[in-house]
Amino acid sequence: METLGLIGFGTGGWGALLVAGAAMTFAVTLGALAVGAVLGTLVATAKLSKSRLARILGDAYTTVFRGVPELLVIYLIYFGGSTGLTALARLFGQEGFWGMPAFVSGALAVGVISGAYQAEVYRGSFLAVGKGELEAARAIGMPVWLRFRRIVAPQVMRFALPGLGYVWQLNLKDSALVSVTGLAELMRTSQMAAGSTHRYFLFYVVGGALYLVLTSLSGRVFDSAEARMAKTFPRGIGRS
Image (tube, rainbow, N blue to C red; front, side, top):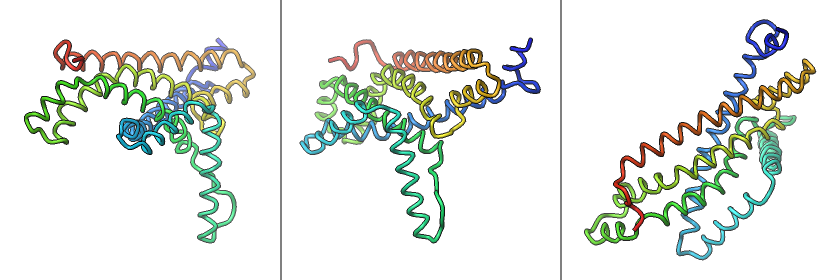
């Protein structure tokens, strides 16, 4: 009964805070996926460009942010952003240390890493689009934007969905590292509950279970999206 009380929603229970922590983890991951989508699209475009300089810059981005530890990126963005904010505040006559908001720095840091992985997903998906369809569209005089909207974008999204599902799961786990900045996401909340009650095993198990709930539910969402997307394309399209 004592265990149920600790993880429950009553007086002295940590249930509400753990659920709030899980919601914050979801929000950070969603923000990171959005940041990564923008960066990933830009980097994939650079890597597919005819410009050698653009390809080198795109390759450098994916090499750096897939090669360095995620925790280091979080520290660099959090402390680098805080240093910049403090310097900016001093220009306007403000004193003291101005810390970067933990949510913003966390979503940005995980998003920068996510962008490196999403770039490869988008690049591979673009290369999977059938060349014959693009040539046919050019032959009938379809403008570039219309070609992108009707042929390229739908097929890239269709091929990218499985990879994006993997990147989402990766971001969800990386978001636990954001706890070092003090953000009360799921990992941080589990640590606080464990430290306050000295029931470390219990709360880390509960935290792990909530992560599994998030990954399982989001996995089903991506599976459903893949199935819906597959129904909108005739079998075999995009592979020639």
